[in-house]
Image (cartoon, rainbow, N blue to C red; front, side):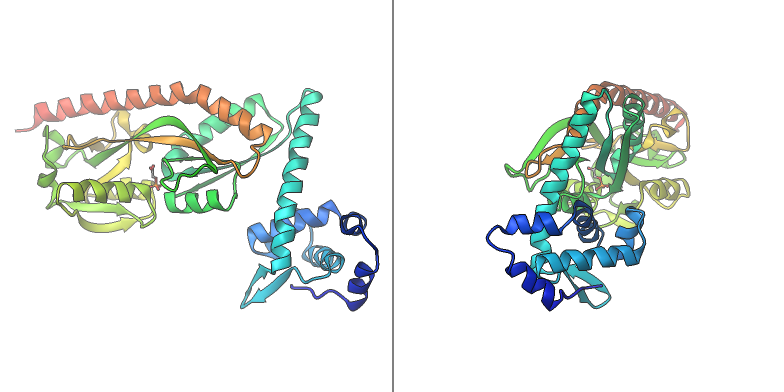
Length: 346
Ligand code: PGA
């Protein structure tokens, strides 16, 4: 609902004298700034109203008042969507700084009272969804006053979120688009393994050359996935192209498809720790696999890391040995499964 400021308001604004910020202090509220931040982030008045537990008319009214105080419309309608005007963008940039300073102040004050309250926004790769909830669970036991939001998506979307400062902290691969605005801290290993059904004839073979997979049906992740890029690059390095039978946007769906005999695929070992104890999946001993990758804890230096995010970062680093131990156990289980399959194979 884009709002046009009234003429009176614009006139009042220009006639209030020398100090513009003084004018804004008297005519805007922090709640209005919080609303504007949420509308720009969520791209919708309705969703902002839901997030902040307000009615839509209240949101529209407050944005109208803010728009009048600023002296310009803050949003415009583009088709069915809304987008911020240039003035809206400027106000939004200022809002983020103000709200992040306040949120840090809240945490520091809470700390002084021996409490920790606030919000942690985490964005993680689909491969990290197998460990992030567990780390968050342990973290929230120590800091029960903290609200957590977890966004799970593929590499391309995580990069977009990082550039848009949508979350406090990310678990992702090394951003290639690295610059001095981005801080990366190496985190747990993320081995990418070749997975087949235990019934697959190659499951009982050792040292399989990559070229032997050229005729296999492949299940590949969707465009934008880091695993997909890694698999295609690995094949390309051997002068090969996998025969793609199907593309799926979910690691879990891929596991089902493998069990259903639709083909083989590359997955993160993290997504297989539960199956490693004896399921219907086996790891293939293929030349060039596992592809040894590593996650990183990543954040943008453009915004000060909140105290909560910093505390979580340290907590996650301390938690890393548990993640490594789980991977090692999965590796061992899959290795003994392979030994059994090799012994049984003709
Ligand atoms: P993704 O994960 O395939 O979901 O982008 C990539 C990775 O784990 O490196």
